[in-house]
Structure formats: structure tokens, C-alpha cells
Image (tube, rainbow, N blue to C red; front, side, top):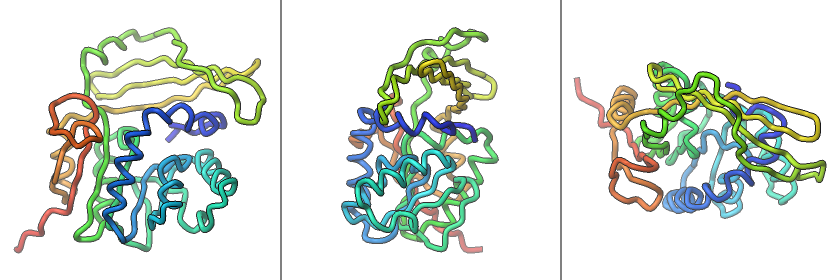
Length: 259
């Protein structure tokens, strides 16, 4: 998976997402506080959510596919004097990760589930999470409600890059200008995004794929993976789902049927 795998993404990721992640962090912090057992964050990235929770005493573990993101996480943990992080974090894919623990809470923040490119991968991920979840545990994830009018604005097959934002390199080495271009494939329900990083005379281009998933589609994926939907919210304030904004799903293991 190429998403977020380049040397500059981890350096600006926290700054880029700090506003969007404010409500999300508060939500997951509250959910974790309801559990005394093991917690697993899938796609933990630079540790924006995981490290503060670990400092608060949550028994949390994490996995991520990006070596660069995890390097930033470990550097941040060292700078903040957070012990024991290496024993809790591993570089693994959400599709086929393996842990020796079962977890009372597993969550995938930041819409990261949408980076899985095929239904086979989505099902493999969900079934793997099911195996690692305790019988009374909860699985929570979030992603956006598909907005077709907005998606249809990305039909140009060869769009120009649009400026997104600018960031100061954390080591004072210059300014990073970030832009992107995106196209969509309506048939496959996927956005193809290319992020362009420009610093001095250097240019990095990083491809990213983001699928979109409809409500009934995900309910079927969950059912086929052995889950039942406990709750579906609109946003992190736990409002009743109204077909707009962020979908926040709470799943649990479906009762086993006696043969």
C-alpha cells in the first residue's frame, strides 16, 4: 500500500490533521476509558491518538503498514519520554496482522479502512479483526458518507494540481508546499489521489487510493464477517445517523448460531 509511504508525509501529518482529529481523539479517548482490557488501534500512523492514550494509562497497542509513519511515532515517543512503545507497536497490514492477544476494543480511525482496495481485502480485514476481538469486545471505525455530487466534480481524467496547504519542515529545512489532484472511478467506487510535495527544488509525488462504501454495503460486509451492528452515528457526538457526514460504526460479534 503506497498511501502515506514517503519521507515527507510523516513530518506534516500531525499538523495537517490536528484540527480534524480533535473531535475524533476525544471520541476514541472516551471509548477507551470504558475498557480496562487490551485496546488495539489499527493504522496508528504517527501516534496522534495512540501516544496520548498510552500516556493516560490505556493498555493500547498499535499496527501500521507505513515504516515512515512508525519511525515518526517512535521518534515522538522518545522525545516525550514514553516508555515501552516498541513492545506495543508493530509494522503489519490490517488485512493479515497477527497478535498474541485478544482485545476488548479495536478501532480504525481516520477513515483508514477506505484505503483497502478490494472487497476481498475488506472482508479479510474484518474477519481478522473478528479473530482478535474478545467475545464481549467492540470494534469501532469511521469513514465518510459518499457525497456523489461532490465526487462527480472529480470526473476530469487529467485534472490540474490544486494547492492544498503549506507547512514548515519541523527541522527548519524549509517550507513544504502540498497540492493534490484527484479523479474518480464510478464503476469501482474509488478515488485516485496524487499528493505533490514541493520543497526547494525537490518534488515528491505520492499516490493514494480511497474507496467509498455505502451504508447497506458495509452492513453486509460486517454480517459476512461475523459482526452485528450495535450503533451507527453521524459524527463523533453520537448523533443518530442522518445520511450525512462521518459514519461512525460500532460493531460486536454476532451470536453464534447453534447447528
